[in-house]
Image (cartoon, rainbow, N blue to C red):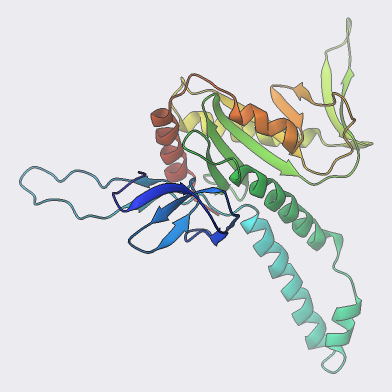
Length: 281
């Protein structure tokens, strides 16, 4: 059983749809069946018991609290649609008769399509991560950073710690370039093809610092840059720079599934703490 007595963990005989986030659940996937509503939800949507009543109060209400895992790529998708709609409105206002045609045959600027590219990358990785969800792999997607317009793409709470994952849909081969040596300071740069993407590492490190400040100091926190469609070599290819691991989805998944020191109870607790401190975007 999972959560209340009306919830049951099971393997689906037929495909279904998660009641909480709307994700498609394929046949044979693990899911939670809610007898009260006759619906299913992803196993990553934890249900926690209500707090105990204070002394002198009556029994607490039989209410369950769902931890909202968020939707991968949601904020990037909204921004893309906002920009696309704004461009269409401008074109139609300027050309009342031909605006629809002009909009249909013209392309969005790169500043707009970049949001669509980012959303696609996060959605693709989010789908893969959700397929791993279980009691010992709990996920959060698209979380707002405090006092910032930035967000954390994905968080995975596992037996080996919390993984702060930034998904990128870049073309080219990611690789590490090291300058300096014996007589000059060592400087590491992350390149994707010929493009210097070192700032991506800085961004992940900032997110890792935020997550570490929320959790118990004993919980390990790992930074990850996951390039979902990059030109990776057949053998090797992944690397670490400044404690941030650069890799691809199939290289990431075994790390999340590995055994570690954190029990299921500690994983659930860290998951709740992060969900409360970092709301969904």
